[in-house]
Amino acid sequence: MPYGISSICRPRPPFLTWTPYPREPRGPESEAVFIMKIGLIGTGNIGMHFATRLLDAGHDLLAYDRDAGIQERLKEKGATVAAGVRDVADQAEIVMLCLPVPGIVADVAADVAQGRAVKIVVDLSTTGPSVTQQVERLLRERGIDLVGAPVSGGTVAAQKGTLAIMPAGPESAFRKVEPLLQVLGKKIFYLGADPSLGQTMKIINNTLYATSLVASSEALVYGVKAGLDPEKMLDVINASSGRSFATLERIPQCVLDRSFPMRFTTALLHKDVKMCLDEAEKLGVPMQVNPAARQFLAFSISQGNGEQDNACVIRHIEQWAGVEFGRAATEPAVSGA
Image (cartoon, rainbow, N blue to C red; front, side):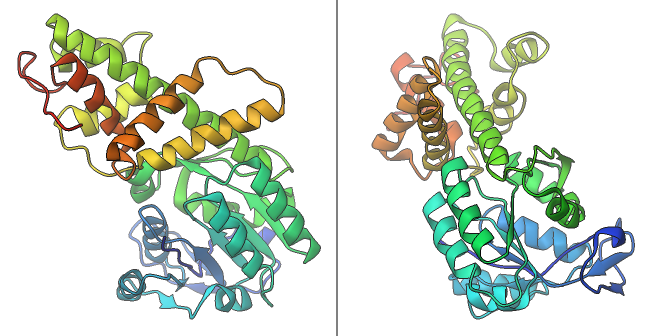
């Protein structure tokens, strides 16, 4: 999987320990900014939006990705591309990670830790608390602070800069990167000095989303087969106690018009839920309901839907029920879910 890097920051002057220099912002809504070397490792579906927003805010961007096509896109956007992960860590005092799975985060962090310039690593990935704790120990041995700062809201929120971000780590390090996070998200929740706390919060959030998505899909398909109008059902649910992010955002945006745009793959959501259940088991916390969502996601993956958007799980229920949500209630579901 591709990953990349950016050199960017928007720090508040009182928190700077590096020497900034002023630059005119490029974005129409930007204020005066201060520029210093920042690395962003990970320029996939969400990371590319991070790079774009940071560039538009007037920051310099040093980028790296294993995918030459992504490197070229970054260069066209105005970024300077690096030769590799170590090249970024040799130049950037703050290195941000936005990577798909914990194993890649751990491998990349090990390379970053060898850099000559890096002082703070900000992990925007969904890494999970156990791997985050391992990475934190590795970086601390090199005198590098880790801020675990997973994000929530998907690609649309990443593009608009309205993500929820859950940073945790040494407060001094968080304060230095907070203005940068404010470029990427609208709601910043500092959760404490332990970098793994943000990761715990993120996998709890994603597990709740997955469970509500599967439960909502079952209920909505039942409603269609019983004769209810799909849009009116969503209107009622979203004005009542049954609403969730699935019914408020994902199902109206992705399922109602049958577009199923790629926002977040089924495989990645399954990974997050599995992490949550595993971590809860380590702490002796029973989980009785959420495992059903994990099992349903695993079934969807087994049917070849792992790289499709997670909203596609509704298709299995539609196929079994013989109706399709979002179209005429009497229209048969499309086979081959």
